Image (tube, rainbow, N blue to C red; front, side, top):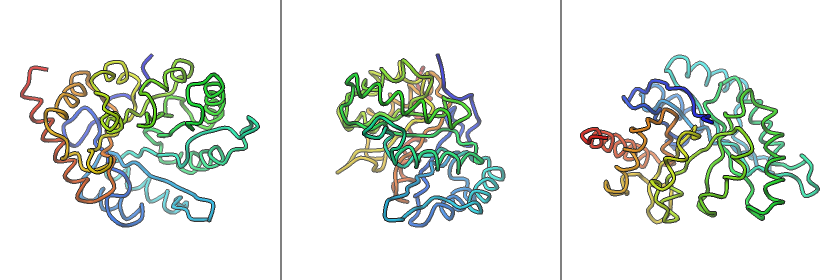
Length: 271
């Protein structure tokens, strides 16, 4: 079963839509989107949203949502949305967990944007035990009821766990993957070992370099490591969103340059 989105056109001539986070510039979400949209820098923007217990929040108000909708229509943008917390049930097995309250709030708030995906993590406590699987499935069944299409929910692989820990969940529910290639690199796993199996179910790819930590410029990755990954995406072809998940201006633009240079190199191969 494939839950990948239908092909959409990228301004960069790639089968996938090239995306950034909503924090390329040291400013709030709306100024970032306005600047990225006006300059034609991206096809998709991953809205990084948070709401913490001390009242600090960057959740957009209705005026900001209207403005984001207008920018999307004007500049052929799409948005992906990163949910704030790792999804989990409460200790008593109920839906009364703050991650679910916040997920519902964000999903309801951003539905007018018709997001390309809702990216999320699963709580890792007791990962892959029978109890963890049951609780994760129940939490996701609740979240699925809030979206128009289950495949909009795209669960991300994390560097903390085996790359295969999500398989019991994906076998049971018609949700999608967020395939974080940077996390695979960080843990020493070759993405080439899993991409053939994962890409048909992948709605979003996160790509970033590894330096003193992850989520650094993609330019840090040698061509012999990056190019085979790009070749796999072009060969399929992968037609979802590819987010350059970095959070600094220089890192984003050097990452985008590294990606497009890799695409140009790979296209000289017989793939």
